[in-house]
Length: 528
Image 1: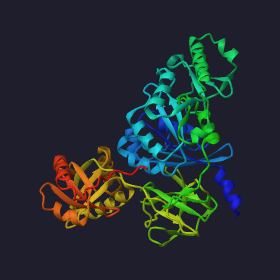
Image 2: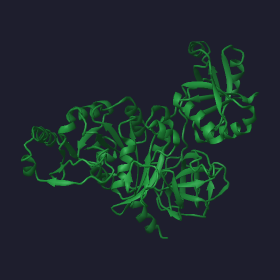
Image 3: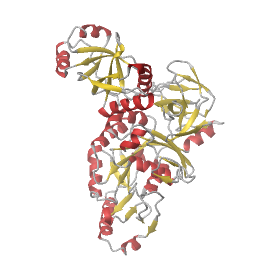
Image 4: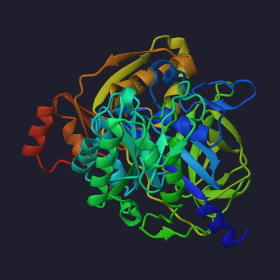
């Protein structure tokens, strides 16, 4: 395959993620994208029906029972002659670290806002990650088929709270029971809203001229026209340069549940989201798209296939032409890596992939040598920047309830630690006997315990912990800290960092003031 072929295939790729506050409709929108692209026949179901394909991005049992996204899911589908790689992310704040890893693998994001609630705390946190990575943002104002806030208020909130200039592409006409549809500002037409049976099939689109829409006799139409005239007057039109620079956001309105307004947004993904750019290496130099094949591992997930207890390493292809069976090199170890077992992933479903191009996501099955943040390359060596760990805020001990299941507990601990479900801290002198689990949020502990029981048959008890703060330290400082009460020196799994756990935050603050020569470094991820 020639370099021009690789460049042409890369130009057809659109790799993006969907982010939102919990319950804003992110996973519903994901399924409606698949529905509109013809990748599924009906949305919202887990198993295939009537010979047609259906899927859900929330494949984990705990996600389905709780109705929230816990892990990220990768799905590939074709639309309008392009290949879309869609990564659905966890919406819950306790899993922001997993979301961060996913955002390291995409070229743009779709931000979903509940039209009744606007910007919510988790939205702000996720957007800061987008800004740190200079990701272009498309915004979807969801749930206009329910009572909603004034859309002009929502635009003002976007501009003031996250410093993005909103440039509406579609504009809502009414809300709730009075929701009539949306005005397409670029095409100067009105798309009339027609309800479907909970959006299980594609929503019919009835296009009307402005004169035809005026005959509907609704006061909502006049208010919407006034809003559009105001937007025209202030020049709130889509600007590709500022969108790509991350300073403006094209805005769309609709209802994901009823599949209305989704096609406008999906069209914008094709038209506005950039094709994969050269990925900067550790020295900040971009690796050309048509260089030798390279990939970046951004996620590890175990037991997606319960029948085989497998382990899947998700990697984004960054450059070149990937061919199944090629031998690549792991930059971290210098060891060769055979790519015989490579798959594309659609929710929990998978199929063997023979080739892939920049922007595509490939799953390597049972690739035990791969870790989150690893670089793979063929040809000229390259190493991409790794992924930092977030600073944990909660700590607990854990013990297996049945000592006869200790072997299963140890295996589960190893697997879930590699995935980054929680951070595992060990006492160098005690090993697993004195381990401490560290996490950003409480739900991570619950997922950890649930998966140990359901996937590894090793029920555990979370025993709690007196620790309130953590800092990275070094060998010299650790010797001094061991002499002080209420401090425990541990080793973090994965990177082997030496850390100090503090039972009292005030003790930590006092040490920082009284003994500034000690090495006590916050573990906060460097989002830049």
